[in-house]
Image 1: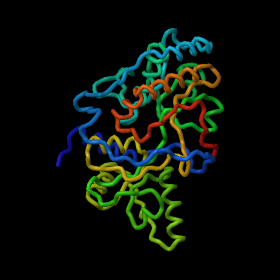
Image 2: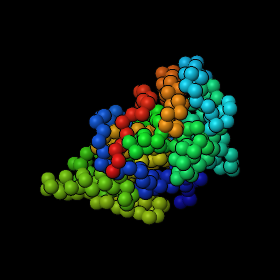
Image 3: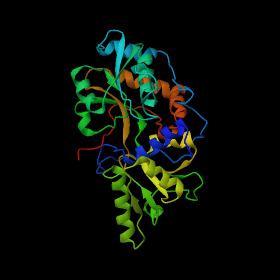
Image 4: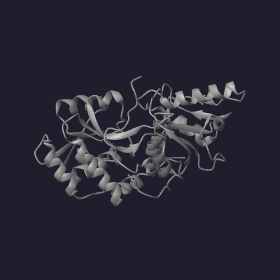
Length: 333
């Protein structure tokens, strides 16, 4: 059966999530508990619809306290009156280039929308620049960009060079077919005997291998890990019942679940398992910008604007109650 364009994109995202690397090892030293709980996947008709062009762009207004703090900080934007924000164009729902467009202002998703809201909250014009992942660190350090909002995880190593204001939890999700009898995967016992698709060399693979060690030591059947290089084959394996579940970055899998209605979330754990990790806006360390950014984010959390962004893209499970300046980071491996 031929897939619609929307289904094709979404199924590709499911599989892409399976091979995506979270970017940090699982050996960490944080002490904060995870606040997120597994939630039902959004309906397939809600929120963003890339096929129809119904892409949400939640807007905000200047936050007087943040504007005053920015003025007092001594921070000088790269371009007067503008906030130059580095954004990626990777995969929905985080950031992607809308079909038929090339301008950075047409990159959609949670990350560019957060960047735009920050600019508006600071009373500055939003000036997005699409960057490759490998290029943002030097770009921020050299003064090419004022800020980055591109799914950046806070780490101790990065905190040596950048200041952070958190705005999302870094989470991994277990997804099963929407008609699956599996209702919960939260710990080692829950995966015993299951066949699970996972990306080789990823954080999520390390989690499953650790859980399998626990199962084997307890005399229980370990999970069978399945690796697919072909994204379509991985998706087909789940839908055909050859595997029981997938395990990868929650954001992309949540969006795909919304778009297709063919999968559901049954378990969620932190990207820095076994403890918490944060996604944050980042700027050059000590330049005075991050405190005003934090004020903006907390103002939008308080008035519900922030929640609208997450709801539009099916990421309410990754929300935070408060933006923190330079929260604990994942330690150096």
